[in-house]
Amino acid sequence: MLKIRMSRPDESSQVVAIWQSSVDATHHFLSAQDRHDIEKEVIDFFSETPVWLAVDSNDHALGFMFLHDGHMEALFIDAKARGQGVGKLLLSHALKVFPHLSIDVNEQNQQAIGFYQYMGCQITGRSERDGQGREYPLLHLTLSSKNLEDF
Image (cartoon, rainbow, N blue to C red; front, side):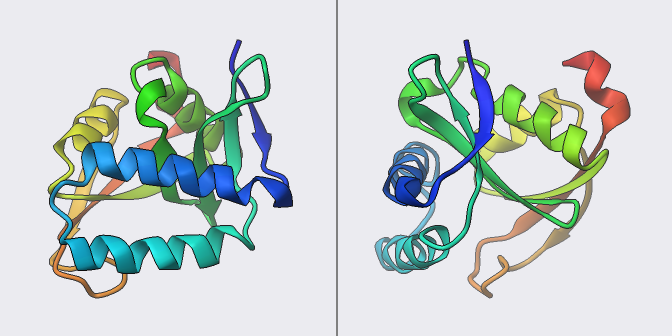
């Protein structure tokens, strides 16, 4: 049985490992240098920032999300846990916290776009660059808790 809980400070290495696994499985469009630079940022940020974790019955982390002011800043699922409902569970929880949610997703990450559209997200805009100014276009999405019945 999966459940959602906040991460503890001693779990930052697990959060980073999930990020690494997820990115390696889905972000083939990143240059090697950008991948390296982003990983350093992720390590710095998530060593200090609690996130929502999806954990299994043994309390093993399978995925995480970071929410801020109604925006899903991050959603990453361990590659071995994909297709097991972890992303759906996290997204459903996000909508309980913020009934109207905005999400940004890399335009090149077709797997993520497919997931979000399947879950009912609507594309509301596009940016030529990511939040750090890198040349990785973002699609801007929204989702409302009224879509919860569809989960």
